[in-house]
Length: 63
Image (cartoon, rainbow, N blue to C red; front, side):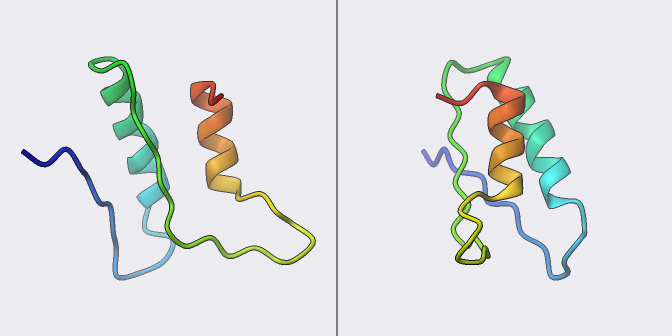
């Protein structure tokens, strides 16, 4: 049984991050561990943090 959810869209700024935040919040109420993986991160050489990953860590207390 697959335990993976992939959220994708054909257009940018379509609300994927908001959907993912709500989904992670819902899954955390039913499971002890939930992983978040972002395969492509566009950052410049001076910025090593991704805003979406930082938001998840601030909201859900990442280690």
